[in-house]
Length: 278
Image (cartoon, rainbow, N blue to C red; front, side, top):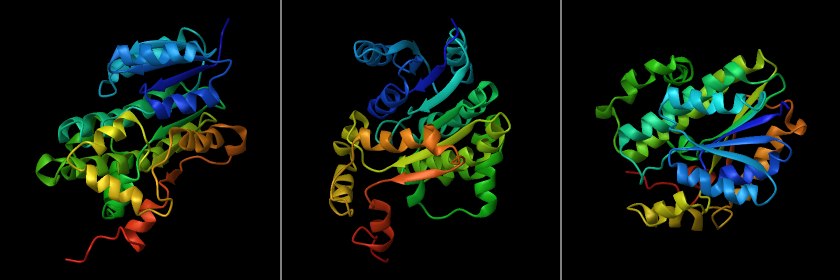
């Protein structure tokens, strides 16, 4: 029997929180670079009454992404995409951040956009970091949005000598995610489908805990202490927004990015987190 299928990339807390909101009655394929992560989270979900198949998937590989799609198509039409895969500035070098978070997300949106069912919807998890960096020119934004995926990493702005550190690489990747969603929403719209992104702030997950314990740990702790919310967020608070975007209540929303950061970015530009003038 054919079923609606959810493709879920990145077996983490945010992806699971969203999938628990949207996945009842659907076949769910979860892919992660570490298959044991996918298996562990699938076990949790299956024991809660969902129907989840875990597979190994490398977001930096077009072939691997196509494998995730092919696995889903065994069960029916692809009706939803939840992309919560990626690496953080403390987890990977510059080249890996660009290959996974920037190139990989672009390829995933492109490939799923080719097969998404009419009425389908997707959400990809970006980051507040994309809102924090210096504004790019309209021409640079258009390059990030529209350059063919296989040419993205050849862009001058993405060459290692033009990237200060892993945080800068991450910011560029997340800015690219936001712009790529805008461009892909036009293509998805031709099939009657929608795609949006969410840019979380500090959300308590294993990835965030790596950051708290990493070289920028004090920076992150200071960030959530001085944001208007005064705390980090939870995966379920991100899922609240995703549920709106992926439901019929969000039917007029596509090509948009939603900043969910407890006001940290506002504080960065206009409050106590504002960097001192040099």
